[in-house]
Image 1: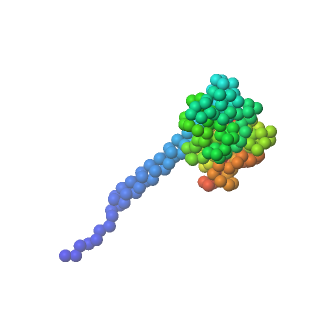
Image 2: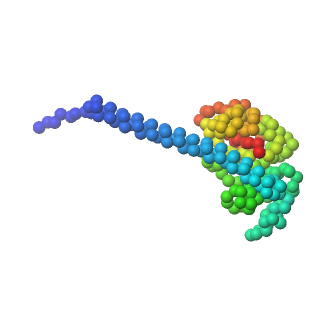
Image 3: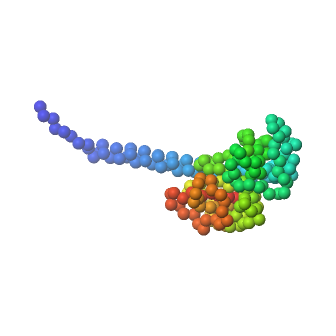
Length: 218
């Protein structure tokens, strides 16, 4: 006997569409929650580094990395590398700390030995989007020159931030404008952890592909 082939009923199609809609909604909501968590982590990084810096200053009356007494304060398992005590953290935030002895690298070693930051050694930590977290004075090459459109003192930088995250972090911590205030941004043009140039970005553009480095004055 020949059987008549039947299609889906309108009710069955409606049920499938509802299920697909729920799945898509859950995926998009989950992605947004992940993005929000990354934003909170990056904001917490800036706050945590600032707190560690001021805690170190209160305890030792010195700047981590630039501390001239670090080598006598910590002698084991090997002596810490001291700074020159001139009030400047020499070196760039993105220095190759595995081999470099810059003060911007010793910053992390001093903070870790003092117990203000977790971990061991002098290498920079990473933020929630795998960009470097680092410090430097001004633009690194010339501490007197203005970096990012006005920073000449100590700054902490977080690299490799997608445009949406960079905009949100700046808005939550400052004024949401990349070339003014205590938080400033540079658009990446080469490499994941670029050197800090003299000029800040004129504005944030959420193209879906733009990536920024954010720096905050300490």
